[in-house]
Amino acid sequence: MDVAKFVVLGALESIKEGSGYDIIMELEKKKISNWTEVKKGSIYYALKKLNKDKAVQEVIKTRTGLYPEKTIYKMTDYGKVIFDNFQAEAFLGLYPKFYGFKLALKFNTRRSRKEIKQFGEKAIRAIDEKLDLMDMYLNSPAIPKPVKDFDRFFIEHERMLFEAERKWIEKAINRFGK
Image (cartoon, rainbow, N blue to C red; front, top):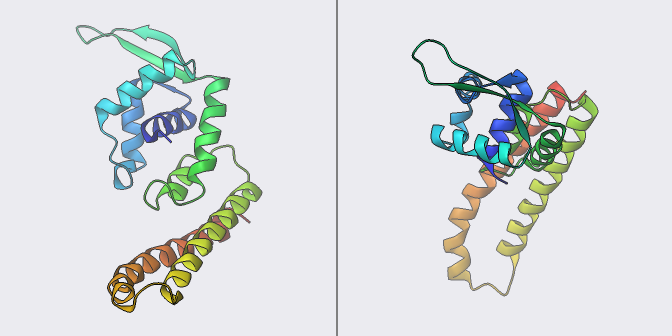
């Protein structure tokens, strides 16, 4: 997934129309920088790529005084399909870096409560599979004990992260999915 494209489309999903600056302001309002490392330059680059790919379209170009020309964009129907696919991937909760579900929820304007619940349940199943794989590794007789003991420390940390994310997604389902 291209996170910059996802957040640009997500911002346009929220504000309907806007310039690159408007998109950046919307992302700041939603505190997206807490969960991604998308820079302002990446936003403008993603916007140009999305325009070239016909996922967004120019609505109007304006100029106020001596300021540079400002282009206003809106998402196309094709852009909505791309956004929905990105959002579905993000709702798995594991991309990027555990914050996908949060990002998907932050930008949600069209997904129903039922869909959010379904995405959340799917994300929880994915987390449970990861936890099971960790347990299988730690319980495997094929892994030498010194290696397993060394890895256990790091796997325990991963377990804590996955368990915390699982708990948060359960809360999100209870709040937004019922």
